Each structure stands twice: as structure tokens, then as C-alpha cells.
Image 1 (tube, rainbow, N blue to C red):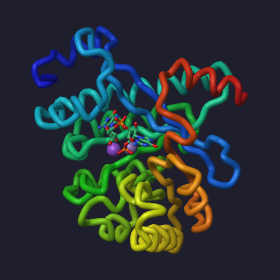
Image 2 (image 1 turned 135 degrees about the vertical axis):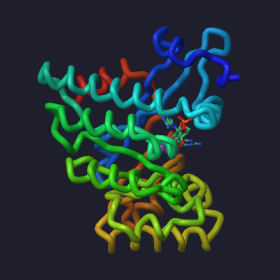
Image 3 (image 1 turned 120 degrees about the vertical axis):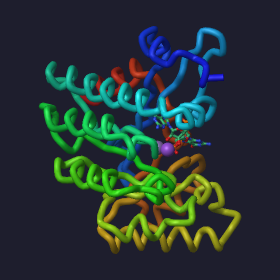
Length: 254
Ligand code: G
Ligand code: G
Ligand code: MN
Ligand code: NA
């Protein structure tokens, strides 16, 4: 199990690679940003998805080390491109519930953005609604500091938990990511369709944008467009791909 692997070794051996999945504008289908998604290229198991190792890393507390690595790598990559006057896009990094309780990683993320020469709006952070539900004062202060520095905050898996409305009640987030569970039911549950329409409207009334996650079909796209969803992310447009491919894509956009 991953709990037994030496995470530092795996990071040093470059076994963790960052994949990217673009987000597209619903109207123009132009790529507007991407999400960084970690992959563990295990010498013994091959390509491992986060579901196979993130729960154990959260259990052990090591997730903060991995998230700090991802955060640093992503913005180093963008900084390097920016110095070469190459095209960049905002990239969203996932923060675990554990990160919001760990002063070291919170300070390191804040320093990264504070000391950066990049435009502030390239720093996007995703926090799951369930992580936000258990947030404490230092975590809340951290999100406010990120916001003050110009970072964009997204609620991940919106609607999947029991606390959806409390995540949008406080002024913390700029964007909600509608959980894939809702999107899957478009076309077979009119009740869910009504919920989606209402959630998009709710977000807009609160001045928030909406990304639909896990978009796979034309039918889903048509429904979401009709209800003025702002952005799409999903296999219909792009599967997550390695950083080299993201570089080639950005180069073509230049
Ligand atoms: O890439 P995939 O669809 O398998 O991701 C599954 C889950 O793992 C998603 O909820 C995603 O947010 C999470 N995840 C992916 N990369 C990271 C990461 O770098 N850090 C954290 N904390 N979670 C991640
Ligand atoms: O919870 P989060 O949004 O961070 O999860 C992202 C996860 O969703 C990644 O593991 C990614 O591979 C997966 N994903 C992205 N788009 C699709 C899609 O269209 N369909 C399905 N089934 N999974 C998707
Ligand atoms: Mn995410
Ligand atoms: Na997530």
C-alpha cells in the first residue's frame, strides 16, 4: 500500500507526474484554464490514479507534502514559460482537507503566490465542499489571504455533500464545480435537471461562475448551455494528459 512507500523517495525519483485537464468556455469552447491532477507512475504498479493513493496519504498526513510539491511544480512550470514569453493559462491545484489544517503548507502556498512574478489570476485553488464543511479558523483565514492576494477559489464536487449551501453562504468562493454525479443524470432524471438549473441560477445570483465536471455527451452540453452553465470540463473535450502535451497545446495557442 502507498502508506508504506517512501513518499519523499517517490517524489525525488520523479514518480509523481502532473497531468492537466483543460476547462473550456461553454459558448466558444475555447480553453480558459486547466486542472492539475496528480498521477503516480509506480515502478511496480504502473500509472496509478489518485483514488488509489490519496486516501492513504490523507490518512497518514503525507498528502500535504504531495500537495506542496504539486503547487510548486505547477507554478514553476508557468513561471518558466512566462519568462520565455510563452503562452500560459490559469491552472487549478487541488488542496486536501488536511492542507487546511497545516500551517506549513498554508504558509508555503501563500509565499508562493506572494513572491511570484506571475499574474495573480493564474493561481486557482480547488477545495472540496466536504473539506470546507470542517474548516477551522486558520483554514478560513488562509482562504481569505489567498483571496486578498488575487487567487481564484473553486468549490470542488459542489452538491455532493450535505453542506452545499453553507459553502456559498460565506463569501469565499468564486466558482462552483458542479459534481459529476449531477451531470451523469442529465437526460434521465428531470428532478436532477431541475436541481442543476437551480444551482446554476443560485451561483449566478451570488456572482459566482459554474464549471460542469465530467461532461461526456452532446445531450449534457446542450442542457447545460440552455441553462447558462459557464464552463465545461470532461472527457467529451479532453481527458487529463501529461505536462508535455499541455506545453504543446499552449504553444499552439500562442
Ligand atoms: O485525476 P482523478 O480524476 O483520478 O482525480 C480523482 C480525485 O483526486 C479528484 O477528486 C481530484 O481532486 C483528486 N486529486 C487529483 N490530484 C490531486 C492533488 O494533487 N492533490 C489532491 N489533494 N487531490 C488531488
Ligand atoms: O473531484 P475532481 O473534480 O478533482 O475530480 C477530477 C476527476 O474526474 C479526475 O480523476 C478526472 O480524471 C475525472 N474526470 C474528468 N472528466 C471526467 C469525465 O468526463 N468523466 C469521468 N467519468 N471522469 C472524469
Ligand atoms: Mn478537482
Ligand atoms: Na477533488
